[in-house]
Image 1 (cartoon, one colour):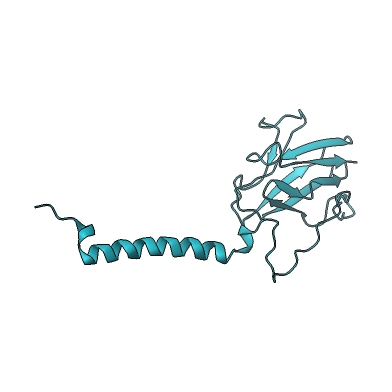
Image 2 (cartoon, helix red, strand yellow):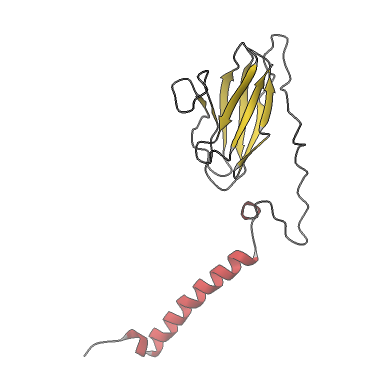
Length: 168
């Protein structure tokens, strides 16, 4: 004789309970979204998100008398974008980027070296190289002595998640 648990009243109740718990979990997960799950969406009755910086605005770090930025230059990594994506620094300046991952995916920041190519020995990359959601990192970098444009990207979301540093 073979025992079939689905034929027993207790077995049916157990299976029903498990299925009900799974359905309830999904309903509750979507009924009460968290901030990290909203992306750029808002929910009725929730606070309005703060305005984004003007696309043309390019923050320049405050400088000390020696020409080195005072404190770090804040860069926020969201899902598939850097804020800001356009930065300006002085030629030869030592810059400390303070990175914060406000997205849900893993991110990083990699600055192309003098050869203009990524993933070569002359790149500068965030420390740590994998920045989890809600995490922070730093990137210490020295701008070239010559004016020009330097590319940077997230290794995991390129080419969409990229930006430019203008060296003046």
